[in-house]
Image (cartoon, rainbow, N blue to C red; front, top):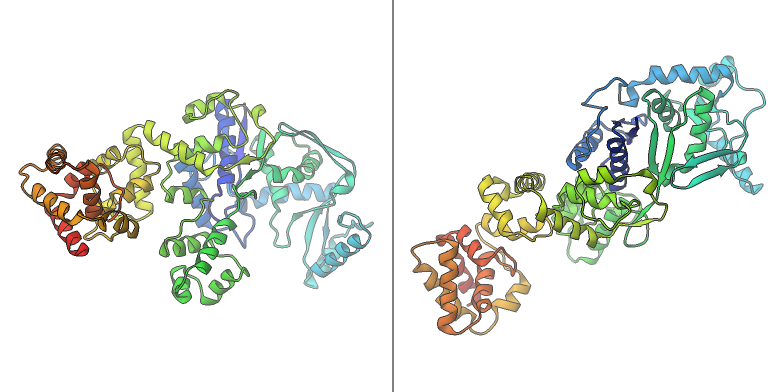
Length: 536
């Protein structure tokens, strides 16, 4: 039975790269009729937060990547928060200390820096200088009294280690490349390297799928497994996903785009932006000068305030931009993997059936946003209407849209008449005119449509024709506009487009007859009045 795990460090929102790792672990477990475990690696007490752990679980659940064991689900291998497993780690830590495979050390940061500088002068790779005589308990007690940081290091065996990897084949690491590394920090918590090795063994993990950046950690993990008498899981280190700019997809991209937009804009009140983002004026100034970065929610709040679209990096960003999870999962599944044929648009059941870790490739994959848009458009077209409605309601809730106050029947109708929309955000944008008291005219729409000769006269005629209607439905409205066009020998666009701008403020909306029907007669005629006044 295949057992996989996704073990994020809950320090913030779930990055799309982490979501890809979770997805591949989920697919491998489902394909192998096995088990997918979620484990929170929260031993970094300074950076981890309970709210971040909750957000990670919300993001995974939204994507449909549900775990068989883990927080909020339970299981036979808990607890699933590493901060609650200290007794377990201490037991195996003592085993290594007793066998001489680990030892205490208490170097200060300054002393370690001297070692690094000496290695640099000698033109060799820095590795920790293991003492000839390992410190005893008395030496540790003296160090603690002196206030020195006491940590535990693992004693590497001193031989080459070959990592057998599904993606990269056999990768040899020389003995000189990996020094003795810390497995217990001065605060008493284990490091990631030690805790994950212990947990993978005790939780029965058989396959470890993770990012390429973890390959360098693997020889140390293998050495720990051998020292503790543990099994060696199957490793698969996945390729890097790069952005369209050529670099690795990074959370810093959002900050970079926002910083540039603020600098290019004129007349922005920086104190106001700092307040909107929930940061001090000093923090905001440091962000603009590249001295510090702001957290995701702060950046999002500022960007929304000044109407700047930021590149989506975290899973929650894609939710806020109106993507649906089925499309995102499908798109992400093809980053570094393929089913071996020409299939691209695949529901999750098809992905599970086709998944094979031997088809993971080592070539870097491009996060092509245009392709993602195409995937989302297609999935919105083929998904069950009731499921799409569910996603639309969730989207409206998270972006706090006034459209969310509409009943299910209205929302379903909006989705139907906006068929072909690329994202749920597009549907909301097209529909917003129905949920505001007064529209704001788009500058381009004014120049291109309302300022044309004869528009006011045609609009007055249109208003009269609509006012005379006794039945206000899409069929009657379409007939009235068509008749007006025939009587005055003008194309449909000459009447419909100015009318669209009058009621929505823009040149984009659902079909004009549906738009008028939903807006209602009284509000339609009032908006035409407002538009005629605006033109004059």
